[in-house]
Amino acid sequence: MSTPPLPERVLGYLSGHTTLNLATHGPSGLWAAAVLYVNRGLDLYFTSVVTTRHGQNLLETRRAAGTINDDCTSWRAAKGIQLEGRVDLVSDVDERHRVVSDYLARFPFATALWHGVADAAVIARDPGIHAFFRLTPARLHFMDNEHHPQGREELAMA
Image 1 (spheres, rainbow, N blue to C red):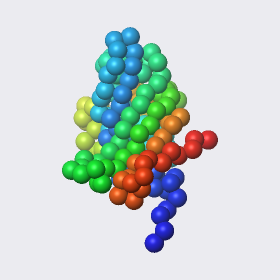
Image 2: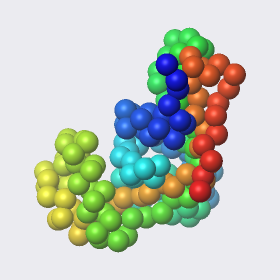
Image 3: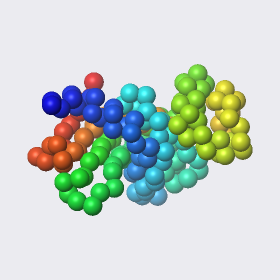
Image 4: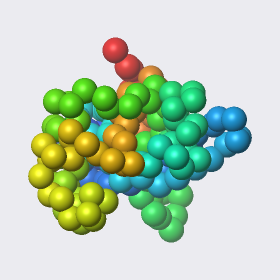
């Protein structure tokens, strides 16, 4: 059985996971936070309060790195994504509406962030303190020690 092309494996991995371990840097130094994401292609969308340390770092530098990975108990089982890229606030209401719809479909419990409001159009117009961010990878590596023990593979970015 042949291995699917790298882009297919990366997109499959992204759709099968939910948590981005986000690393940021800003005036207060380095910081990390776990955020729940949805993806549209390779772009990762997540919500966070802009006054948090990582929120402030993202607004200041517009850059982040991160990992999405499996918990594992052996080196051979290690699998995941390492990435870095540009981060932008999702300010366009139409784009934010699509993202909120995807986010609530994947994480229905997230309506609690908006006091039980489940209408994506309402949230998109006024997300309150929970801004939406888009991380567009500039570099992305996929590691799968079970199938590629020689090392990680870099996905070429357009």
